[in-house]
Each structure stands twice: as structure tokens, then as C-alpha cells.
Image (tube, rainbow, N blue to C red):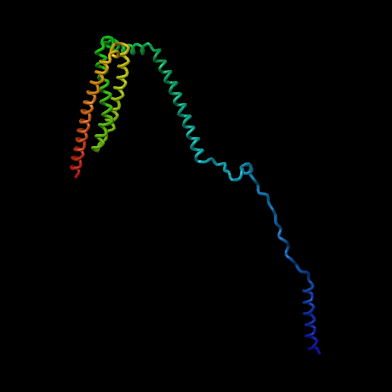
Length: 232
């Protein structure tokens, strides 16, 4: 009897426990809570339109630098001009400078008065024309000839450029002086003859100068060849 009662009691106890578990309410997970936090916006971001940048570009920086350089250069030039004017004014007001200037110009004035005749201006005009023609041809044709032979001389180019400028300025001043102090410019025969002789003389001087440059070039090449032979 006890053996039958014990399994029966255990079955009733298990059934009661199972019924209690089924009677408990269903526990559900709480709904997710979404929170929206306000992102702080700086004043610069709020004022800057979308798609734009406040960082200066390279072109803007370069333009600013160029403008600053231009302003600085202009200020330096203005300051230099102002200082030059002040120095020139001081020199002009100096009695010692006036004496030195008169000492330089006086012999030139006396020579100009002594040689103020038509033949002097004819000769001066002829020489200036020959100088312009000679240096102009040497600066163009002679340098091309030297370049075709594989040579180049910057010093000779500068020298011929200086000679051309001096001759051109001298021709202008000679013509001006002849117009004011003689009858040279009133004679077409004198002007044309001086021009023709000056052109011929200038062409001959050009040929002479070109041959001298080519000869100097050959001498330099020979020296280079000898130096190379010695190194070998």
C-alpha cells in the first residue's frame, strides 16, 4: 500500500509544480528607448553655408603675397626717389659742387666754341654714323657668324651694345649741336656725303671686327684642343 502511495504522491507533486509554472505571467522585454542628443554646433559651422570652406585657397594666398610685394616695391621706389631728390637738392645747393661742375664743363664749352664750324660737325656726324652702322652689324651679323662656328661671347655682345648706344646718342647730340651752332644741317650735300662716307666706313669696321672675333674664336678652340691633348 505504501509502495503505491509514494509514486502517486510524487506524481501529484510534479503536476502541481508544472501547473504553477504555467500560471506565471509572461515576462516581455522592455521596448528600446531612443534618445536624441543635441549635437553642439559651433558658431563658425552655423554661419558657414553647406559646401563652402573658410580655409583660404592657394591662389588667394599667392595673390595676397604678390600684392604685398608690389606694395613693398612701390614704397621702396618712392623712398629711393625721395632720397635721390633730397641728395640732388643738397648737391645743387653746395658751392663746392658748383665749382667742380664748372671745372668739368668749362674746357668742353671752350672746345665747342673753338670748333663750332661746319667741317667739325660734318666729321662728327660721319664718325657717329660709322659707329652706329659698325656696331649694329657687329651686334647682329658678326654674332650670327660666330654662333655658326660654335662660339658665343657675352662680353663681346655687351661691348658692342655699349658702342651702339654711345654712337646713337652721339649722332643725336651731334645733329642737335650742328643745327644750333652751324650751317651743316642746312646743306643737303654735306648731310648726304657725311652719311654715305659714314656708312662705308662703318661697313669696313664691321668686316674688320667680325674677322677679329672669328680669329679669337679659332684661338680659343686651339687652346682647348691643346689642353685636352695634355690631359690625355
